[in-house]
Length: 168
Image (cartoon, rainbow, N blue to C red; front, side, top):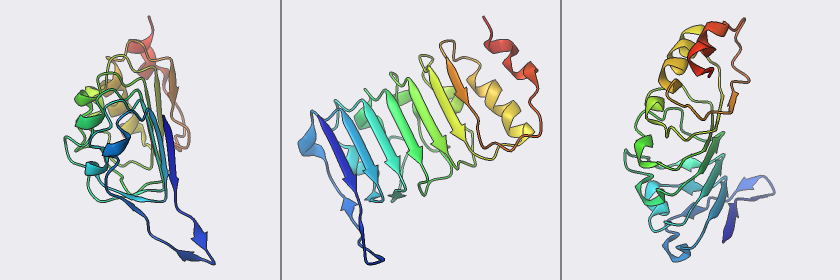
């Protein structure tokens, strides 16, 4: 129920791997992908997938319904990958998402559509004070949030007023 796909370097020559379809692994629950070209159609048929971790991946294209086929996803981690904006991702399709970890993103749009059941949100990107203000407006509906990680945001200060709507 677990799969890991990683690309290796042989004598400094990168060999490009591409995942085209994982549909044969319909019972797969955990998928870790590193240094591999991936497109949204690779996720078709992974209805049992609960955890998806994408590190250093080169995305062909993610569309608004890219995660439609992994609606049971509870954990999504995207790190050091070639996507900087998730504005085109429809997070409303991920009703069971409890853990979201993103880095190197430039757009915080669509975060207001995150599952209200989200308990962990990690955004490790350079965020400005303005970005932070936008972020907290977009996530104030996350009543079950237990962990918020904004490390590497390069903020000079943090104003506690952003947390006022998150305290019960």
